Image (cartoon, rainbow, N blue to C red; front, side, top):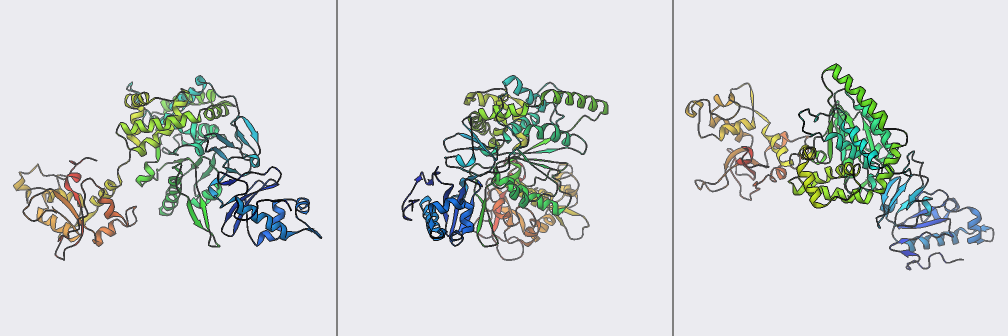
Amino acid sequence: MPDYGGDIDTAGDMEGGYSAPRPNLPFQALGYDRSTFFFLPNRGGQVLEFSGRELGSAGALLQLAPLFWWESECSGKTGMDTKQANDMVLRMSYAAGPFDAGRVRGRGVWLEDDGRPVVHAGDHLAVDGQIISPTEWEGQGIYERAPKLGVSFSAEPAETEEAKRFLDLCAALPWEDANDDGVDTSSMGRMLAGWITVSAFCGAMPWRPHVWITSEAGQGKSWLLDNILKPMLGGAELRVQSKTTEAGLRAALGRDARPVVFDEAETQNQRDADRMQQVLDLARQASSEDGADIVKSTQTGQARRFRIRSMFAFASVNVALSQAADESRTIVLSLRPARDKDARAAHFEKLKSLQAEIVTPGFAARLRARTLSLLPTIRANAEVFASAIARAGGSRRTGDTVGVPLAGAWSLRSRRTATREEADAFVAGTPWVRAAVERIESEPEWRQCLNRLLGQRIRLPGRVEEVPVGELLDIVGTPYSTPEMAGGDDMPGDGGTARVINREDAASALRRHGIKVGSLEPRNAGGPLYLMVAVSSADCAAWFKDTPWATAWKTTLARAPGAELPRKQFRIGGGLPVRVVAVPMAEIEGRGGV
């Protein structure tokens, strides 16, 4: 029998940690994971997995190679010798080493370790200008055969004069941030153009931001999707809508690196909100180039790993972003046509004419070919712009989220890699870039959590109305007990509640809910004032129920600038001393900044 891998402790044909394809074999042994063995047959072109016991049966072996091949290579007295064949495939698998599921790649555009882009169109690969079968690939990635994507990347690349017209088309949409004062600060159209340009290449992007297109009903969302977004993606995208679930998306995407267009992403009730949050959790995991796998348990108790590499475009009337982690990864693009009916109709006619002039047959394919040729430049520019945004005062997350579509928009007007100096000047001196950065910069989690606390309403004894915690803190923080002592009109707060609640009543109401204003220093030692919240407060726990901070509100508040979780215990009300989280009152009164 031929030697197909040697003893189980030999390296066999391992090159760089994986088994190189054998041109004389009808399948590749990809490796093993405990008692499961993985193969890529040339005939099917999809990864198959079998247990060691299953590989002792003719049924499993015939999925790897035809009968005549087995009878030739592992012949017995009456045909194929299954024991001999089983021994051969097991030795090949052990020689290939442990199987890495992360090497398996579905459809889309990928970057190999050497930086080469590989276009996986389902039935073929396009790499270095050559068309090959997925099973002929000899690199680190394992490309499975799949249904053909109805999208082309091999047209003649668009020239700059043609490409930049797409930027003009997207900017011509009736965006909410458009203005007529002569200063070009509209960023939404440019962000959309850049996002569309790179989204078909999401598998090769260093960061995968998402967009959320929103408007009132009948104001252009569907027209934008049907006449710009979908024609430009050309079938590279996965289209879903309405009641689609996270599990359904995972199953539909599989190992593909494709953009997702999610229409009618509405949240009409709590069930819809919960479903959409799970979808957003999936999109969040998809953003990072080197993010961790999503691991789900199978019915047999084994772990199944998913690594989503998609860029999502959501469209709805209501934007369902409620968590800072999602807001920082998603660019909200709002359409708002003119109120005047005649002006709106005239603008729409011009827009339709421009769309028909630019989005012609073959244009999308030419733009994709241009983007493919510029992938290394776009990736480099994404980093250049992200760093420039961070140097200009934005967060690194904002830089990543804005930097990728900004690099895509830049590629529509230039083939060059921007220098550091150019990027700094572009970010600092271009109004629409600054507007995009300011819009995406999300409020810190600690501030959102603090706002939730300050907005909770407390009913005081003998009163009908409920008063927000924030207003009670305003009253407690004044040096006066009554509005008369304060001189009347200079009381903080809303100018109404403060006039009828004295300081001690406000402080007493707060203490009953585990909150007080005080110093962390010993009595009479002075020091700054803090909002002190008992970590054991049942009322606070109830206020944060069903929020992102339900189990972590204490540690989230402790991330505020200057906040502490002191080991010392403090007396809040009439009970025993308790542990507290202490937030400087300067942050609440607006003196501490963000």
